[in-house]
Structure formats: C-alpha cells, structure tokens
Length: 205
Image 1 (cartoon, rainbow, N blue to C red):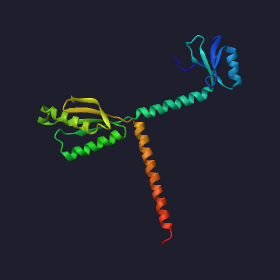
Image 2 (tube, rainbow, N blue to C red):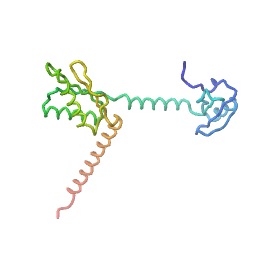
Image 3 (tube, helix red, strand yellow):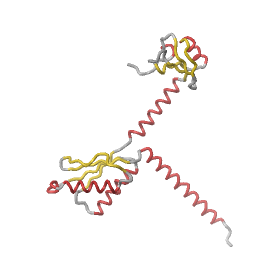
C-alpha cells in the first residue's frame, strides 16, 4: 500500500477542512472550492489527515515539501547511523604503560562520539581468574567516566570478557565541537600572524 498522501484530484470526498499555506485555518469547504483555491494559489491540495471527519487538507507546494522531507530524513540518517563500535583488546595482567596507551585510545574514541567494545583476553590458567578481568574493566570504566558510561556490563564470552562503553556525546555533537575547535585555532593563528606582521612593520625606535 502506498504511504503517499492523496493530492488534488485524487482526493474523493465532498468536503474538507482546509488549512492555508501558512497554517491558517480556512474552515470546512467543498472539495471543488478547495481545488479552485489551490489552482488560484498555484499550489497543491494535500490530504494531511485522511481519518479526520471531514479529512484535513493543506495548501502547499507538494514537490518542495517532498524534497525538504527527503533532505531531513537523509540528515537524520546521517547523524544517527554513524555511531561506530571500536574495539580495544587487553590482557588481564597488562603492564601500566600498556594500560595507559590503551586507555588513551578509549578516550580518543569516546571523544569522537564512538562506542568502545573492550575485550579482555584470557589465556591458559588466567581463565580461572575472571575477577582479574572484571576489576580491570571496572577500573577502565571509572577512568573514563567523564567521557562515557557502561552501556553493556562485563560478561564472559568463551575465553574473553566483554564490556561496551558508550559516549556521553553523540557523534554529531563531537563533530560540531571538533569543527568549532578547528575554526577557533584558525582564527587564533590568523590573529598571531597579524600581530607578528604589525610588529615587523613597526618602525625601530
């Protein structure tokens, strides 16, 4: 079944509740008068509430409305679909330097608005000490608590233990902040160049 609204001659009812192009209420009019008004205004008559009695119709440029709706839907998909899950792998007995390096990656991913799947890999006898992995994951979650939250609690998956950390910031917000910071750096650099130019051109005393 088509989800497209009925427009113009496809609207087969004796009368409609008409709404003007700027949202103003015109009232209940015959379908003939509504179509005539649409023609005179060089607009389309679009059924926006088919189940109302009588149906509600609006005068609008349907082609422009469809185009704008498609653009909004595309923008919404772009902002929503780009949450990427990054993965970081750790060993239960990781040394402090390696831990800081891995934590740095997690921080970077969360700042960019991405989710992080943290995997603890157990080998040999380590499998009998799951509490080591659990403590390590808890520590990591606490260390990055300002940037992310535990979206999926630590759980055992075969030889591995997995936890997912979600970012507090959405991807779109992170992108906007990054762009703003870049623009800020650019303007500061331009100011410094201008200041340097003034100093160089100033006459020596």
